[in-house]
Image (cartoon, rainbow over all chains, first blue to last red; front, side, top):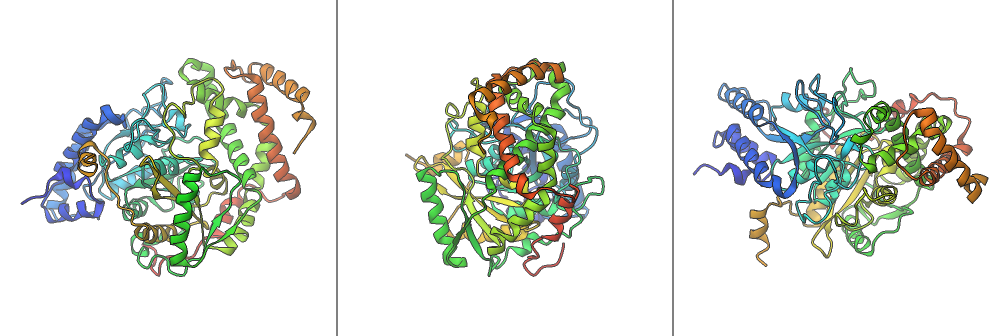
Length: 480
Length: 83
């Protein structure tokens, strides 16, 4: 009996690929199911800004024709994906979650999307996001809030909010987002996903609209480590057109998962942020499990972590002010209060402070690698210091609220954006409300293979079962 | 770091400057309480100054950062060569 394409969407990329390869299901069928799910879930989640139904089905049919000719591109061949609406697609609208007129259309295909297409993936649509790539909550007054697939009264996380909701709900098995201060990691944590902010420069940013070009990293979100590794494999690597792209070899991420990076030294990175007791308890359980596999974890500290946060904040605000200045002057009414307020301080930061942050970056990175990462190969800390807030609690549009909300949510993520280190957020369990909590794994530059291997091992050790969160699956799993 | 600017008078002066300069220097009408912008500005300024001071002078150009990422790379590949 042929598999149900809709049911396949609840599974992994490899499971879908096996059925596609055997001919039991076609890419067209799988893509049609993904599009149908996207439409069915849109009223509940508001994950999409724009569907590419016609283009996606054309791509899927072409993938099927290739497969029939024996041309198989790899495990992503024919797999439907969707991506944050900050990636250019030639001749197609790109909103960046903004009401500013004339932002799009795209003039080229973003490098990361092109690499996924070259690997055979199908692109079903542009996902909802925080306005102008700015905002950790998932709010967007122009396109409507995106909702958390686990509990629609709680924030989805941002700015890659649609990416997280679409993957968590089982619409697509993976998505690309972008991360400047936590924008892949936070929504991943809030929706029970694996979200990777790679090393700065690991993935080409050609055609990806930035929040801050000194910080931005394109990164995958997926329900499993293996799917995350597959997406990373397709998009990682040097791009000569991107002046910040690192000319570094790309490991075989999938093959590197075996063995769980045995022998890895792990430590807890202390932070000045106060953890909510629920998060602290969940994190302590993960630390205990990690200790059983990798040896007891000691605690390390880095006194300049708050300074790293501030320097990343300076980059973010100043670069955004420079980028958005012309648009703010011409179309002030098109900006939300939150984004406007967050951009204003960037106009006034002394140039010498910005340059200090820039000039010190290599030195601070060396200090961090010789310090905390001298004592351990992987550092562990929570992704979010608090349980997932409700949408009312995290409302940024209220006058004067934005700075506090952003600081509270990004306290543990933003410092690593300044350092440019790879960070993987993995699920570490559920809070008393049944909402996911996440932990960050941090390594040396270009340590993505190690991070993925450790996350694969630890998620098995804690018994994390990835599952799509859509109404049909929730009814089956939660009969009460 | 407690600086004279972080006194009430300093904050007020910074707020006045912010209110004036947003329009005068940048042609942008502020939509945010100048005192809040000023407080955020001073907070960032002081944190960066405190971190920078012991490390200055730095003569290496900013581009050294990308080289540092490569130099400090984790060699782990799980025993598997580059794809």
